[in-house]
Image (cartoon, rainbow, N blue to C red):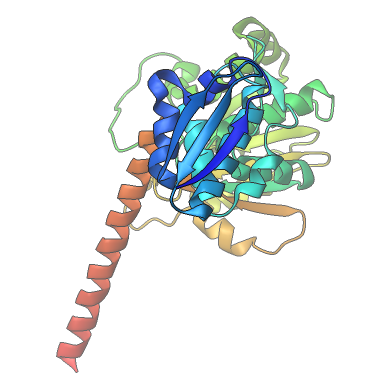
Length: 339
């Protein structure tokens, strides 16, 4: 049995790393086939790692070391943070974890700093900083919209732009909503609610309302972008998988001087009519390789919601791949029978 001892540099670190009812410790033990135990002494606490495989022991130790460092910066190590560290180190990408926990993008109204929680998120934020146009493509829960809004708020606060413009295609997500009562704003509000929520969290309701009245912040359906030229603006097109190729071209050509545009979407959740091509899918192909346009792909590993969301995404991906395989086999069988 191999053994490795990691000494804790401050009080309470062991409890944070082990988690509530040792839930974090169990995740590490199951993934790397090791056992963890806390050892108290007069010189301080330490964590003893034991296991048969030397490589697995080193991986578990690397995970503990990373979480130990992180425990000094945060009150609680969430299941998602621990699972992400385990996944990255298990995949041999543990060195990338050192890039996290750095620069604060913005601060919420409750004083909570907004930072990249995964390597994919950090690369996305860096791409937004470097490029004039960024396409963020990936599954739900990866922070595509939230981080884009955080970058927009930061740019506004630092006076890099004069206004923020947020837009979405106004299309039903599988339901027929029918006639909506009220004025125009009441009709479009349900489509744009996620954008409001992100701004409320970063600015507060009162401050947000003031900026809307001044025209500093504008939230509108995608159709309202036609015919405009947007200078000195940070523009975000959310749920872009529901834009048609024509709408996508229209949006991208609104870009004016000293402006930045971020386009976000999930190609697996298109609500367009059957047979209608997604403008986001087309844009990814057409704009690839153009200077000053960044295309960033998120994976299920970047999901920062409940860990079940990651498993749901993986299950649907597996189902879709199996369905595509069966369709391909049927097509080949039909072709062979004809020949």
